[in-house]
Length: 182
Image 1 (spheres, rainbow, N blue to C red):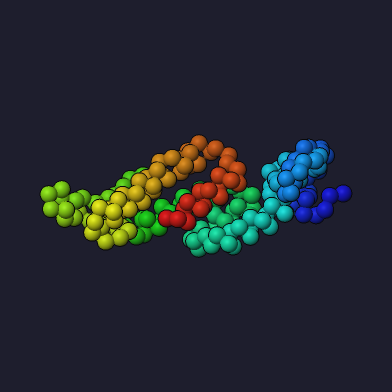
Image 2 (spheres, rainbow, N blue to C red):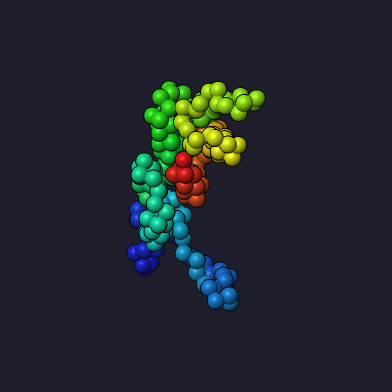
């Protein structure tokens, strides 16, 4: 009988573990059992993995707007967690900019600006301003955040929203961390 922290929370009957060659913390090698991080039958996080994830999110201090996405991770609903993170970022951008666009177009319109090449003056200010845009470095920061958001929506968001890629926990955590950056 497995200890409770290494048993599937849904009560699945787990296959027997096999001994495998592994490296220990002291640098030595030996044959031992690897514990499942996820239930190999239903895909749910094992209780000890869930405990580690909760600790990680406590330390990382994810933005409060992403708390629903984090709760979905805890329920082992990884694809839904990533989608929720994309929705949270998009809703935040819509609210801040007043635009009713989506994804790539929203990021482009909300953060883009125009500079007069002759005078260096701002001809059209962005709807969402990251900094004062007074020098080239600050304008590069504004452009960098815009390009990151455009890529966030054009790449990962479209994969999740349109292709149902069946993501695991690692990709979903990466999406939540990136969303928290914005």
